[in-house]
Amino acid sequence: MLFTHTGVSGPMILTLSRGVHDLLNKGKVEVSIDLKPALTKEMLHQRLIRDFKEPRQFKNYLKDLLPRLLIDVFVDLVGIEPDKTLNTITVDERVRVVDLLKAIRLTVKSLAPLDEAIVTAGGVAINEIDPKTMQSKKIKGLFFAGEVIDIDAKTGGYNLQAAFSTGFAAGEGAAEYLEGNVS
Image 1 (cartoon, rainbow, N blue to C red):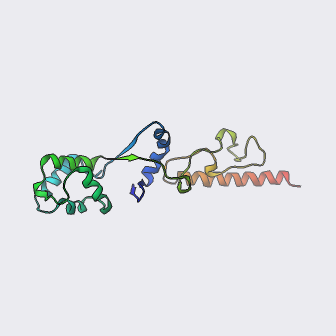
Image 2 (cartoon, rainbow, N blue to C red; image 1 turned 90 degrees about the vertical axis):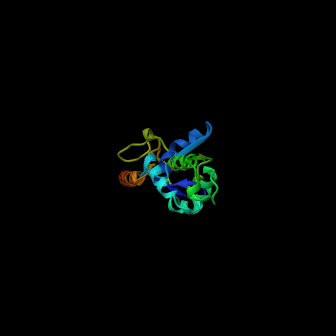
Image 3 (tube, rainbow, N blue to C red; image 1 turned 30 degrees about the vertical axis):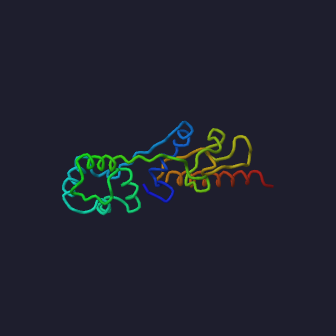
């Protein structure tokens, strides 16, 4: 997952975005992100107990835990003064830090515009296409490939593979069609 200047992105977010469009039409949509997935809450508590013995400022310590651009947002959300020293942070404040690190919640405002899309959904229904040649069942001589077809998959190369495979099949199908229809 990537934090960008406009929100979040990356393979995980692209996969989740498929269902977000419909959810946004129904109301508020939130995403919960575990900023420390390799650590359990207990492991994180133990680390903070050890680290919070230092007289460092809270905001400076967060550089060890978070991306630089996330620190100010995190400080606002956790409600701890940025200049507070670690060794004065209370148990309740430490619990809030752990809870927020394990489940920071972001509200989804919108999807990126279509001109920025990496993967799209929708298109020509697959039941209207001959799967061997990718030719339209409705209009002879019209072939489809890639995301113009109503198929989409998880990220990780599956959409590229679908584009390559349907493109190859459409090219072969179009060549065969032309051979039989050109005089």
